[in-house]
Image (cartoon, rainbow, N blue to C red):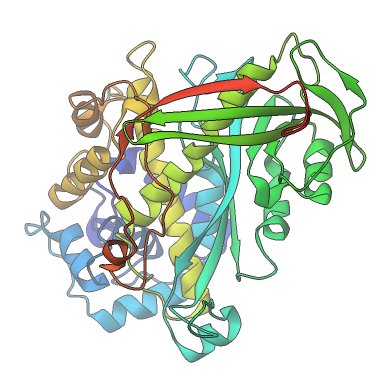
Length: 444
């Protein structure tokens, strides 16, 4: 452990991914190092905030007890809830933001299974919402959502947008802000992290002319689903059924396909229209691009891990705008640290897809290491696996199989609403067939 009052500042075995030196450097660059040594040095407060995202059901005093539970032999000072609040307020959000900036990235190597397609790093952009405390000043800044019953309902929400590496589900970049003006506007701030050698997957909410033109201007390729209302002009047909077209100033290929999903309950067919700046039909066949688009759902898996596994669908603890930013950066940092630990682990077993590693198992193992204050400082021999990695490798999931779940409201106003609405919550094994359309849908 660290010495003296710095001893509670750790993250268990994950401290090896976020070492003391990294945190100290961030604090120094942000000018957040304490002027005098207190009971709660700035470094300790950073680790407290990170640990709090692993124990979301606990208040900060309870998190402090978990950090110090295995350190009873050390003469640690008594700390009150008020002291913890003042320490978090003094620290602010900048050090957590700087720490996330250091750690964010694809967390993959050239040979990481599933990370690349046709030599391109596969990434996706999407947005989600985080519930925050319903305080008057927070509500005045963020507003509330509306539904068919009332003009303002639920908690105020922060819109979180992320650029995620589909192979590892690591966060390459993230931004957040109020619900308005919406995902495409907020998402433009993520374009700073796009570059050549990437293909970014986008849903219909981001497929505006302005956004697609901006993505094309970064040098990255994109594969985006277009609304059925859009009718891009046919400039030239390719042998694989796709055709050359134009969206704004961007030259694109359009792929129209019919996807049929067959389950025990029957068949469902839908028509998809995809646009891409990958213009070579021989290097990037239309059928393979349609299959690649399914990888966009990996960003949804990342959000599920953040909102369900880490947050437990809870409202953020913070009750002021600066502390909300502080908590979100801590949440993103810990999520990224666990993804890095998973990627390091799977890289030790050749051809192992990070998809087979369970985030929940890694999360529970990380919590155990914090409570035990184990593996804080690496030994002379670096172990990429460690206790967390061994728990993951001993419980690898089977290769992903195709399953289908109905699209439904995940958090209805009533937990029993799905019964009256007759919503089928079961998942089914499915078979998918893809047909590239050579003519416009429903045309003679």
